[in-house]
Image 1: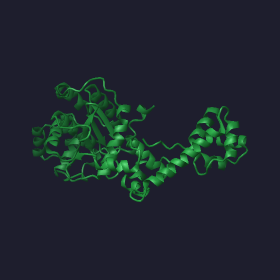
Image 2: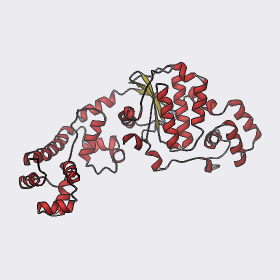
Image 3: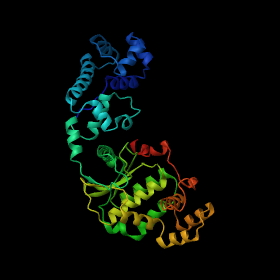
Image 4: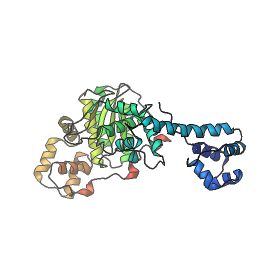
Length: 359
């Protein structure tokens, strides 16, 4: 396993917090400039023996050797990463291949730190192992529609797998008959009859966990073009959902599509991921789940697609208007720029759905 790069600043901040020191107060106690303290915290300069001895005096119970060892280990790990990358897989190549600029944005990490974090996410020791593991990553998907980049898909799945046990609690062994139970399917439809996405996701997670299914929702990774996937984790099914289109109807539809994979007893395991594209059987299952075919056809025959008709028919079918409008637009009964007020688009804040689980 790649050793996680930890800046000296992480430890300095921990000790500062424990003692209630601000950067200004620490600088005053050490008789140094606040700018220099900030540079140490942000790994913009290396720690000297002189300053390490000052830390020993300010942070009682620590030794100068402790501070020097932490700082030295950080820079040695950075240099090792550069040497290891070699000419075949440069850090810039890894950055581009795995979209690190967007994947780990906003964390204030250097390129070397981003690459190291990527190795930890994928649980490999080196960049060579990262590419080897990616090359042997098995999956199948229909190139007719999504056709995502293999490395990006591999990245997305790995990130999802890191969260599985954090956000799921599985009390029961999965049994297909329980998922096929009509009462449970009715409960599922009731859960999806809401536009409160965060609440829906929490209820879906509980629903799935009670049936022995893991559920993970994660923001889409650049170029992955994945809407959803099914697989197995510790002998139980897992459903992966992404925010690719950021539309409520797309996410709900993808979820039910993946439920269709499980009900139809797809051959999924921990190495084979079935990427959700236009698989006709499971799309048909999802469509019928939300609106029965005969009812939909009858609505189409009416030719009445005004807002009031949309609201009335959706209510009668116990689905949010987004689902019906999505069907109508997909089937080209209305233009993509029509009835857009019934297409709920998730905002950035709506995608931070696991904050409660992490506390």
